[in-house]
Image 1: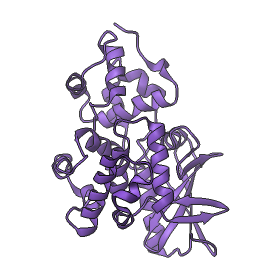
Image 2: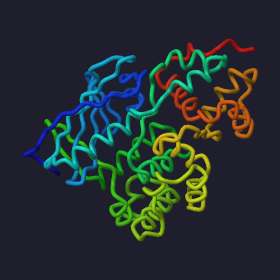
Image 3: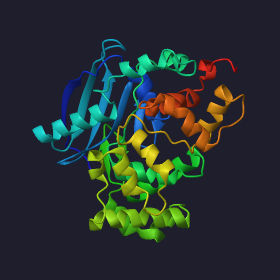
Image 4: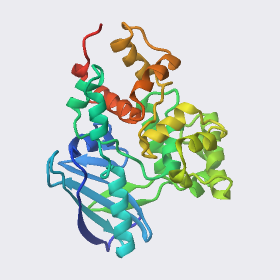
Length: 317
């Protein structure tokens, strides 16, 4: 565990408007205030940042509003030089997608009876991103065919067993395990954290391949969507649904659409298919009208579901 002495510095980030900090931070923490080791409490969002000098914590709060956004970021770490501060800045900007221009998506949504009320209710909401492909991929695998609550419990157990920690202002923050830690844990170590045999095998195998250099997960940030699909789907336990969630929540792509997701199929069925759940193929075909902005459609939809605000739904034809 990393303890004092700690260094601190503060800087500001100015996202492109419109930008709704509270809604984006709420979504990042699943509207729970504390989701694993991401916190959004009393208007401050905090999380671990992986700096060249080691782990740190970034604490982010809004000084502006939706149309004139400004974020204040405090970074706390055992060592803070220029490179560490700039790394923290890049990670905060990435997590909050500060440079994303939502206006083209909103223009496309204006004439769509499904999207117009959805975007109006969530104006300025960005799709919060993870900073590690390994973490995003493992999270997607953990979430396969189980409830979100169970997936979070398993992820918590894995992080508690194998993730490094840093304590700031009396609060312990935990980083996601490194590929080396997951590979060393192996199938038996992961099984001890309540993973199924198959998921433990998938994750241990992926971590081992990353450590050996057989795959380069973090290099996928530089690849096209098609290259990401081609690189990952040969891996055991990784299908199209998993990769599309990675496109949506980690790689910052605009057109991810996990059409195999039952919640998406049910909701589309409710509002555009006379109440009949769509098949994955039907959902994919229908979604093409929203390309290249399907990531936003997907995430705005889940924001409405998770926040308990279904009143955006248009009347059923």
